[in-house]
Every structure is written in structure tokens, then in C-alpha cells.
Image 1 (cartoon, one colour):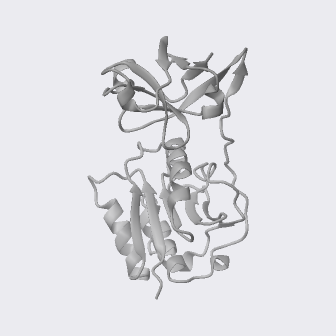
Image 2 (cartoon, rainbow, N blue to C red):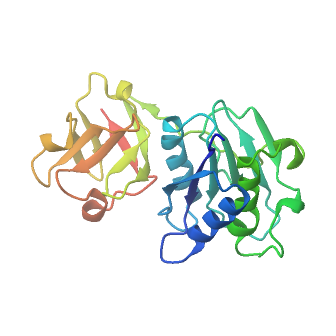
Length: 252
């Protein structure tokens, strides 16, 4: 029997048993599933960070992977839970913007079939009682049509495109990674013919890799997500200059 892939993205961390319990529930419904830990280190309740991590990760997964995404400040409320099918993958996530940047969604349903849920359903742990059992049922072959009616996401953000600024561009920091690098929304074409970015009153010369800058020196580099990152040579930009998500980046 072909093993389905289920990838977990949460803000649960590893200090508590929450992730392990979710895995146990999924495997109780589909023992042959292959459960993958995408990330559990999303900052608590940071839905936009989760949406960005999902955007960067989905293209590298096997066709048919089900992404179970539980970064859910509205847990226990009336916010919907969605199942969605994209071009190559499917998703379970709260309707809070988390699926904004995964590309076109060909089919979306509200998850309402309570017969699939664990009982009783906790108002604080839908990851265990709703997301995990539904994911296990889908991995075992349940028809998504039984989950609930077709729907459209109520919360969906547009990608923050850079803006023209004179002869240059004005972008934003969209994420800060675990090394303290500031990932921007600028792509290589925005730096074409330009050699530097500016942020926090500092110049960040464009380099080909991190090692091209002296220790502690600012640099800009094309990161693995295809976006321009700001960094410090062998340093932590976030810790040193406090460059934050939403900060403005100039290329001129």
C-alpha cells in the first residue's frame, strides 16, 4: 500500500507533547502514513510567519502531500477550518490567512463533519481533536467531499510586492529566520544594475554568498527562497540591528 505523506506545521514547539499527540492520532487513523515535521518553531500565533514558511516549503514536497497547519490564535472560536486542494498538494488549516501564499487553490471545503473528530472536542486543542483525526482519515482515503460544503477562504492576503521608488525600489522585510537574517520581498530583478540595499541606516552590498563579507559586515544575498536577504557576515542581523518584519528596504 502506498504511504501517504502528511507534513505538520505548527507553533507548538517541542517542550510539550502536543506534536507527538497529533502524530499519534494521525497514525491511529492511518498507520501507514509518513508523517513529516516541517516546522514546529513558528513564533506563537504568528500566522504570517507560518504562511511564509509554507510558501517557501510546499514546492519541494512529493505530489499529493497533505500539509496540516495549526497556527491558530482563534482555536475554539467560530473561525472555520478549511481543507484545500492546490495544483499538487492539499492542506488543512484554520481560515486565518495561513493559506494565502501557497498558490491557486482549485477546491476549498469547510471541515464540518464532526463524525471524524475525536470526542469530546477540546476548545483549546483542535490540533489533536479536529486537524489530526481529519488528516488521518484523508490519508487513509476518505473522500474530501464528505468534509463539508465548498467554500472560499474568508481571510486571504495578497503578497506584498515591492513598489517603485524613483529609480529604485522600496521593499519590506517579510520574515526573519533563525539565524537572524532578514528575508525581504525583493527578487533578483529588483537589484538588476544596482549593487546595494539600504535598511536601518546601513548599506548592504550585494554579495554572492555569506562568506564573501568580512565578519560582522552587512551584506545582501540571494537566499534559497529566491528572495533577497539582508545579513551580517557570521553575525545575527536581528540581534545586532533589530531589523524587524515590516521594516522598509530601499534599493537605489
